[in-house]
Image (cartoon, rainbow, N blue to C red; front, side):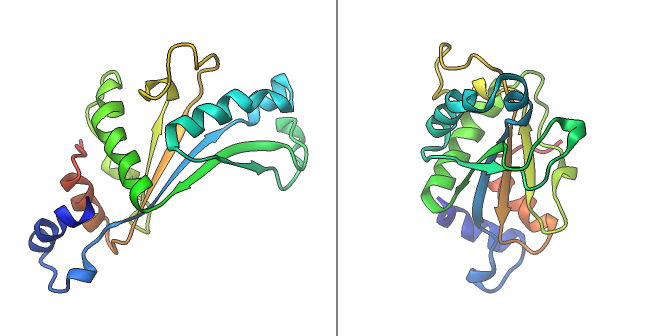
Length: 173
């Protein structure tokens, strides 16, 4: 999939070396479960774990709290997030499904905000309800949760990363 965009990106960004053309390095999919765990107990997130496995195609890792924070009723070692790092074909397949199937389902979607890029030319997108993914049936989602998707690119600049995503079919505001 990435090879299809190389020539167009090379011409658009006026890059001489083919190896310098930006590509997708990784896609990090994360879901915060801290509020669910503190309200309902620690063992109640297996449904979210299986749903995330269906969405990403691999088992998510459970990220635990490093420090206790009394204001959030958080203790050290409590699970706070589910996270998957997708690379190569899995990342490209996920982004293809996300672009063509999930983004059109978002109500009032006008395009990706170009200010979502960080200083390293990576972009983070948020989806308010992970039930928009077609892999999940209506019975699979009992707890509506948000999901964060970070697309890590090899681009040096925001413009290079944005050009790559535009070639992949992303629409910017």
